[in-house]
Amino acid sequence: MEKNSDSLIEWLNNWDEPFNNPLMVLALRGPFDAASGATGAIRHMNQVYDSNLYARIDPDMFFDFTGERPIMRLLEDGRRKLIWPETLCRAIRFRGGDNDLLLISGVEPHLKWKAYTELIFEIAKKAGVKQIITLGAYAGLEPHTRSSGVAGSSSHSELTRELGLSEPTYQGPTGIVGVLSAWAQDIGIPVISLRVAVPDYATSAPSPEASRSLLARLELITGIKTESSNLEISAAKWREELDRALDENPELADYVNHLEERIDESGDILPTGDDLGAQIEAYLRRDEEGSGK
Image (cartoon, rainbow, N blue to C red):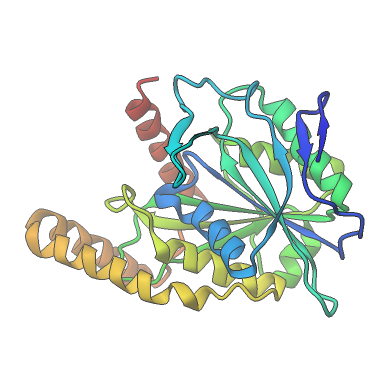
């Protein structure tokens, strides 16, 4: 275990063998992780492939711990363990020529975003990462009765052409993922952004459907098996629970019917750039109001 006191990165395990053309996939809990859709996708991949810790970012300088408090947990042997809102990087090695993966997950920091972004790129540089994929989920106007559309974009013209992605058009408030994407563009690292809409009336509980949709699109663009189908049963239960909520709430049912008509008339479940920007800005305002900022 190696601790770099200057960079606040703790390097874990013995990784003497170089990674094979690794891809970095990143998701952070916060305003752009509605219903844990993005971090849930990372958690699923960690479980499927039994990933190993590669690096940890010390949280001390990046958080206001009155806003994101550490958690005390009681272990089976009676000891207590303090869980900090740290950022973890876990690695998955594949045999047979596939790209290795670095999976980064944690909590969007409150402070020193530039310093935090530099640490992410320090991890990427040491591992030899040549491409980054960010995952996000936002509260949108898509009903749970329709498939969750995943919008993919990149400012890298070759990737947009090869993978059928769009060019970023959003302007407005952003999160640390937006900062990372802009910075990566400046230093020449291609970034792909995948984001899924979660029904705005269903963001309080985790959405396995959002995670499943993100994973399916991730597999499509990378060729790496994500086993997204493993989430289909839990996604179906999620939809059934929402169906029961509609039966008990006529007002909510009317709202969902309105969303269905909107989708069916447009024939497109993905929002335009302007629609997406408006939805994200509205979600950020709700998040700030809820946190009392």
